[in-house]
Amino acid sequence: MSAQDWPHASGPCPPHQEHPSKGTNPLRRPSDRIENWFFRFLMLVLVIGLPVASVRAGLTAYQSQVRAVHAQTAERHQVSARLTSQPRAVPSRFEDTTLWARVRWTERDGRQRTGTASVPEGRTAGSAVWIWVDRQGRVEPAPMSPEAATTTGWLVGGTTAVAVAMAAFAAHAGMRLVLDRRRYAQWDTEWDVVEPVWSARFRR
Image 1: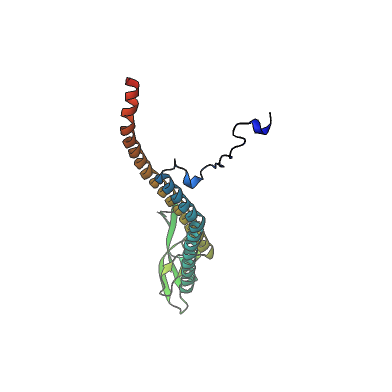
Image 2: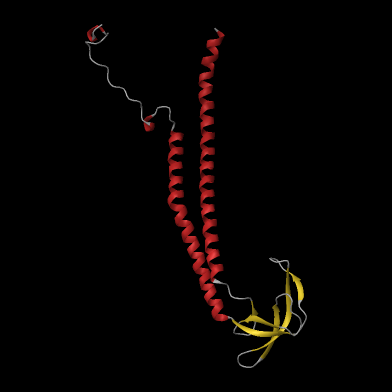
């Protein structure tokens, strides 16, 4: 059989048909497009906004802690003191116990001062210890270390990244819930129209 024997071989060729693109799919509802664009927006936030937010928050916290380190280092100095009482264990919020004792030390100007300071284990009355005091002669904790400032920066940056990611996923879940409720309501409305027609076909 030649090509001319095929039906419509001598007639015009049928127009070339293409599948509709994703954006023009007649089955895609407006809610589907809204969800798709909102998801793209959230992905953009995660890709661009999350690193920027976490880095800025981490740097801000780090710089704030570094200023605190410099201020505490300039305000406090270390002196040698001597215990004037037996250390006493006091429950602490962050540790099991902390040992406290009365101490006496001599300031740079020769004045004798006393106070209460935390002391290491194994010290007894009369032992020498190093303590930190401020310019007013008050006992203070040791200044924050630069390592602590770095740790705080990383912690704040990581926490911010997790918070941004959780917020993005929560926003997507909330949008999905709202759109699903709208779809269900639309399906109920459409079924109220179609159901009588289908029921009538089976009653014949």
